[in-house]
Length: 137
Ligand SMILES: [Zn+2]
Image 1 (cartoon, rainbow, N blue to C red):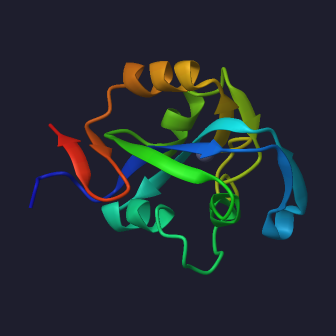
Image 2: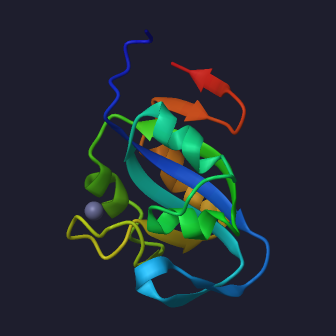
């Protein structure tokens, strides 16, 4: 036990190698520009690990996106999912991942520099990579 509660929010950094239209389940077809994205969610470490697995059924909107985009790193925060999402609102906001809250979306598109600045400004308590935990505090 590392003492970190299971219900935490996280920001998942992802890269999309080329611009394309994607079919996002019930949302229909959405156009995504290539580049860097950050998705805000909440849940256990298992949930985060799931984002890094390719073989899975599409259940959440973000699962469709992750069939094409590469997850890079995840950062965990000791704050609510929607307040974390708000802190990324200076970036382009896409209507995914917010079907059970009032946010316009929990997926954001921006430059790597801007995303990383925001990610670090908000004080992550832990950083997770695709294979294992990279750092812990
Ligand atoms: Zn929200």
